[in-house]
Length: 160
Image 1: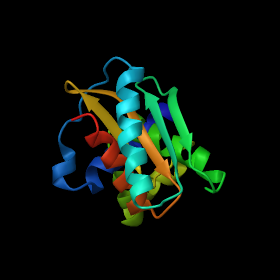
Image 2: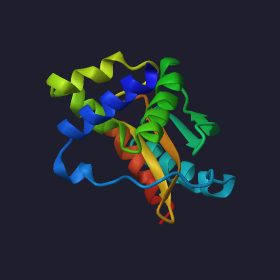
Image 3: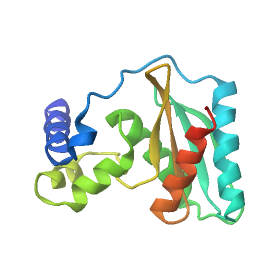
């Protein structure tokens, strides 16, 4: 039943996603290693510090397991779960979590995503791609969703 629902939601995602997002996403690769996770975390934290944003940054591997989690001072505790959820959502759907956010905001078929358990369809989760494979994901929570995404993208840029 869950597989059928996920399949239907994935089809809905493709139907409501922009044409540029309809390219075949990369496959999963080996889990991100600690050294590369540190590069992502360092760059993401630098962006948060530069803007004086209190956030939680979560990095998970390609199996969905936490590799690193940093919580800046004074961030709301709910951001711990939200950051991990954004990362997991990006990993499972092989797309930035903003795609689901946009699909739900658009209504219609996109509202089917609300039936899925344990997804966080809010901007701020991004897959980590190395050598053409998804090796993990980063999720950020604590400020506006667009700012969370800015931090996540800065983290991804840390691998370049």
